[in-house]
Image (cartoon, rainbow, N blue to C red; front, side):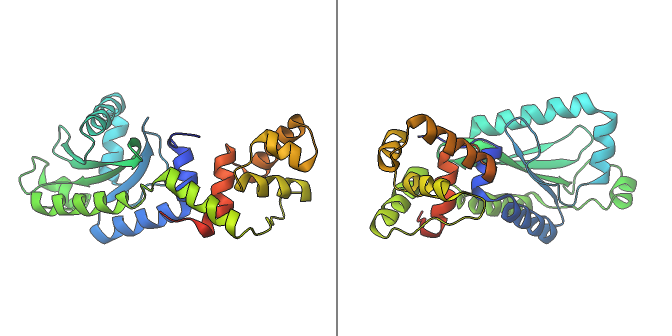
Length: 240
C-alpha cells in the first residue's frame, strides 16, 4: 500500500476544484495572495489575489526569489509548522505545511503583506494596495489556516479499510460509462481488496489480462494507481 500521496497525487485525492474554491475564498476574506504548491515549489492551484508588486520583484530578482522560497520551504518542512518570512525589501509572507499522515506533501503560501513597521516605501504600499497587518493578526490568520488544513489530513489506512469493509458488507455494482463491463467487474473486485491473482481466479482470466484491464482503467480515468481508483468509487462510504 502506498504510504502517502505527494503533490499532484495528494491533490487528486483531495480534489483540485474544492481546494481552489477554498483557497480563493480564504484569499478574498483576508485580502491576501495565496496558492498551494508542491514540495518543489510547483503550483498546484491557480494563485488567488496575486500581488503585482511581488510579480515585478520576482521578474527582476528571479534567481534570488527562487532560492529564498526554496529555503523558506525547507525551513517550514524542518520545523513542521507554519513559518513567517520577510524579504529584503520588507514584504512578508507565510508558509503553512500540508500534511498527509506524517509527511509534508504540499504548502500553502500566503502573502504579500507588510507589518506596520515595514521598510517598504509608502508609495509602493499605496500604488500596489499592499495590505497592512499587525503580528497578532497574521498569527491568527496563520493559525486558522493551519487548523483548517489539518482537516485534510485524514487517516489514509483507516479510511481505506473502513470503506472496504462497508463494501464487503453492502456490495453495490460499479457503474461508470467510461469503463467496459469487464473493467467495471475488475473495479468491483479491487474495491473488495482482491489481489490481481484473486481477480484472475474470480473472473477466470490470466493475471496478465487483469493487469491490462487495470492499465486501461487508469488511462480512462486519468489516475496513477489502483488505490486512487478504489478511493474514487468508495468515496460515498469513506469515514475519517
